[in-house]
Length: 242
Image (tube, rainbow, N blue to C red):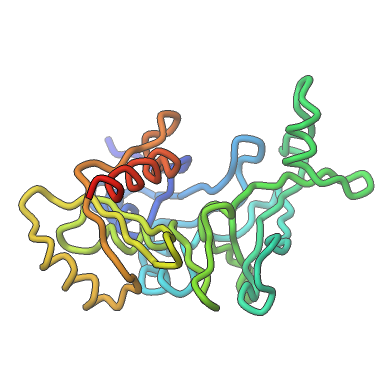
């Protein structure tokens, strides 16, 4: 027997991940769901479409597909971000009957995560995204992780998707330190650091410095997403120890 339908989500599914799933279940219809704890689903994309979008990852972000019929999505401006640079990028907010409207005994969480517009309550996902002319939603990760280098918007999330495909790297991300773009990477055991640098330069990946560490920490809740706070503490310790 074969699996007819596979739904996956919760953690980021990049084109290379979708390709691995597709290779393992070539006869199954595979759908990747994007949503949040308080609003699931928001959008979805077929694995074939996601795989085909790989060349657009660097410029457009991660394709998360068409908006689900149960959801209404808007993109609102980032706060404290250059308007001329952000263009169509902003925070994804969502409303609909399936969206959690309130929190039990937690007014602070409501103020932080909800926007009231008449009778409509919008949920702030905290995710950076944009809508294209075809109605597709593209993702750039958490708003609080995005930073600006001069006039360029840098998304660690997008870097992570790109670095997954660099030969010799298991997982990597990007940070800003002293106005420098620093890539932090966990490399394969036998990978040569110089070769990895050369591979990144061949892929035209923008960076000022690379730091290789033994293990990039994952957050304990998902164990599929990077624990940025812990990683920053590790990098600060490593830099001060040199």
